[in-house]
Image (cartoon, rainbow, N blue to C red; front, top):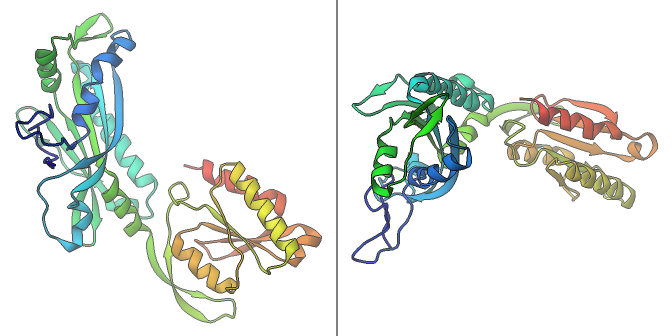
Length: 319
């Protein structure tokens, strides 16, 4: 089995005298080879883009414990190629720089830790990195590249298929603007961005240090926990019903009912990054009122149980 260098084009055809198994070093060629079929499907009209997420492999691995996710032999890559007419390629390069940095900052607690580098120029392409301030220093999470038309010209030479598209009345070979991001290192950046240690008062008013994973509502795996304060049949039934209703509405919900105290649960949920905890007590059976506790403020507000779904869906809709 042969592991290919992710930044090398060697062996993209998968042929080898040693009959080595081909492992994909990047998404780049897989996307590019789909270009002719999609161009035909769109009646040769430009511009358009193609995206892919895939498992990829690297050959050269450096031993660095602080940056282990940057050096794994197997990693997940997210790539997009946008095929732009040459006359507007600079505009689209600027558009994708702006859109990608906005995307990374949108889910961050400290948006300023994500920033763009200056444009790096070579004879054939322009490159801009989106970087994050990791504990070991600044490192890239995504690369945006204007690759020119070299890839498509070479593909046309190899395949004999016309790669030109139409832009208005002009027939042109498009410029490839590519964005490539590592899912693993991107998630590491968000985890580091979200991790906090703070002093919080427990249910008895005592100050304790708590670890909080303040992930954005859109990317945290569990959006809400439904927790009955006592393990009685009535409270379990109403809690299970609410949890089921929230799941059916598309809200990832965890139902928890065990012997741990409420404060122990809240510490655990903060460490898990759960934004909201719904607390159901005996009063809920009489009045329908529940307690909704926020991870970010540690405050608990009361509301009717019928309002919970609407409130959570509103949070999920926010940018």
